[in-house]
Length: 205
Image (cartoon, rainbow, N blue to C red; front, side):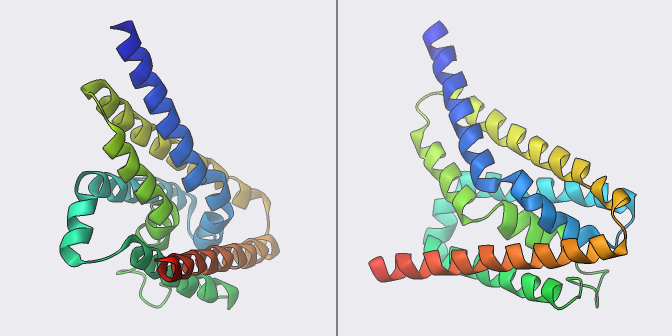
């Protein structure tokens, strides 16, 4: 009994650390700030929780039905990665050019959905890692441990993003523009890396 509990706890901790490192909430912070700098404090907090919720839904869906959906649609993980990279690149270019993603159609655009929730947080790396951990589950305890780990990671994401919004109270308009430019640069680099990794995977196959 004790051995099973320890195994479940260890499994949960391993999953939590892996997902936290891959999803990298601190690394997503400057990008998040760049996207929400023109919004009210209440909206920023709301978007932080929404981004985490969207990511949680995407990760959970792929954990349960990922292989079935990708197999049915005949989509490879490499294709998913390349598509995510292209989406991030579009948003990055808008930021670098001084715009705000979705600024021309704010009512139908929600940055918590794209690019924050997915593919930035719930990207190919996090999706694949979760699917691998699902395959490793040997008992109910480990299944519960993985579920707890996924929930804990997304709570950490929401709290990290929400806490980061206090920075915007300190910096002025110049600082906000600087954050947006840095966010665009980082997002572009992440997008290019995702596309490059997908191309390498395609050529190696």
